[in-house]
Length: 607
Image 1: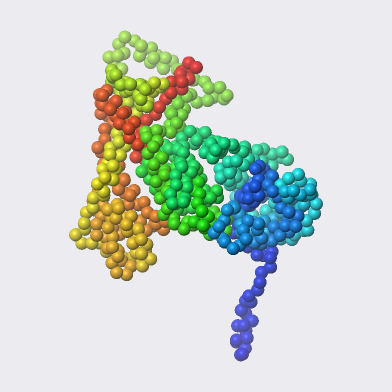
Image 2: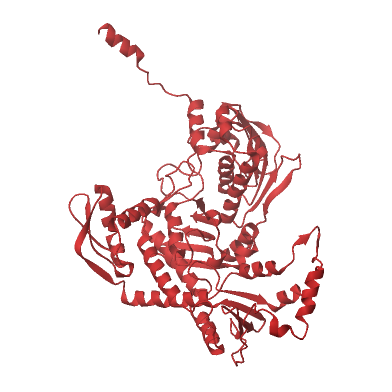
C-alpha cells in the first residue's frame, strides 16, 4: 500500500455500533415529535392496559410536565426494567405484524421518552399488594423501588427534550402545544366513548384548570358515541349529523357525517379512525371529498367522525413510526364503502338543511350585546320623524317600494315539511307558513338544485355522451404515469374519457365527454395524474362534468326577479320535499331557512 492509499484509508470514516442512548434518541425523533406525541403514546398505553378512567396533567404546554394516571391492570415489578428497553412489549409476540389488536406494539415509546426527558413510572399490577417505581433520566436508568399507589399506573415525564436541547427550539408556544395535546385527547376520547378522560393544565398553579373532560358513556355504541361526540364537537354537530352504518366485503363503517350545510372552511372537523386508531390518511380524506363533491365547493369541507373496522390482516398499521397512517390491502373497497355510504345517507336526508342555518338567521335579528345586558339603541329624532311620516295618510302613494309582496290565497296544507306559500318578497324569496313556524325559500337556488338533480338522473340513466376525436390526441408521459392512467382507464371511460396505450410512455385520447366541449386533453390527463398521486384516486373528470351540469341547471332554473303565482310556489315547495339534497344549492349553501314560532316569539319578547 503506497502512502496515498494509506492516507485515504486513514481519512475514511469507520463504521461503529451506536450505543443504546443514541439509538433511543434517534427513535425519539421519529416517535416523539412534540409533547402531544408523548401524550398520544402514553394514553394509548393506558387504553391498552384496560383503563376505564384516564387523567392527564400537563404544564407549560407539556414541555416541563406530562403526567398520565390510569386505572388499568398495571405493570408487574419484574417487568418495569424491561418496559424501558427498546422493542420490548406485551402486546405482540413478533410472529405476525399484521394481526394487531392494540394501539401500541412497537415497544419504542417509553425508552424513547426516557432518552430525551426525565421519566418516572409508578405502577401497581393487578393482584399485587405493592406498587413499584422506576425512573430514567436522559437514558440513565435507576433500579425499581417500592412506592405508594392504590391501582393502575402513573407515568410522569418531566423536562421533555432536556437531553436534546436543540429540539426545544422547534416547539411552538405553550398555547399551541396545549391545543395539540387537547386535539390528541379528543380523538382518542372519540375512539373510546366508554372511557372517561380529563385534562388538567397546571401552568396556572398546583390545582390548575380542567381544559377538557369527557365522562364515560353508557348504552349501545351509537348512543354512547353520539353522546361523546356531543361532548367534544358540540350539540350543533350532533343535531346536524347523519348516522352512518354500512358494510362491504368484511369492512364496516359506522359513525356520523354532518349535512353539507354544516360544512367548515378547513378540514379540522374531520375525524377518521381505523380499528379504533385515529389516522390521517389521504385515501380516506379523498373518499370524503368524493362523497361530498356534489354538494360542497372546493373551499368547504365536511365535518365527520367515521370509524372503519376490519380484520387486522386487511390493513397494515405498521407503515408509520407514529402509527398515524395505514395501508389497506384493497384500498378500493374502503374508499367505495365511504363514498357509497355517505352518498346514501345524504340522499336519505332529503331536503333537510342544518339547524345552524336558522340559528344564524335568528342571531342576525338579535341586537348586539352592550356590557352584560342586551339593549336596543334609542331611535334618533330623524328616525322618529320618518316613522311618523310612514304613518301619515299620504305615505302609501309616495313611499318607495322596498319589497314586492304577492299575497297567496291557497288551500295548501300546513302540515307538510315546507308548509304553504303565503307570499313572495323581493321577487326572489318565498315565504311559507308551516304548522309550527315559517320557511323562507331562495327560489332560484332551490330550483337550480332541482334542475341539477334531474340532469344527474338523466345522465345516470343514459350514460355520459361522448364525442369521438377525428384525430386521436397523443399525450407523451413518463412510463410510470402512462401505466398509472391505464390502471384507471375503466373509471375514466365511465365518465366519457376513452384512452388507450400508444407505445412507450404515451396515451391516445380517442373520445371525450361531449358535455365538456373542446378540452385540452393533455392538461386534463396531467390534472388527473396529480389527483391520483395526491389522493390515490381521481375525481377530476366527475367534478368537471358536474360543474357543467351545475351551470346548465343555473341557466335553466327560475331566475331571481321572476314573480311567481301561488300555485307555482307551492309546486316548488312540494318538489323540494320529494327531491334528495334540495336543502342546499350546488355549492353547499342552504336553499331555505326554517324559523320555529317559539323562536320568532322570543325575538319579540312574547315568551
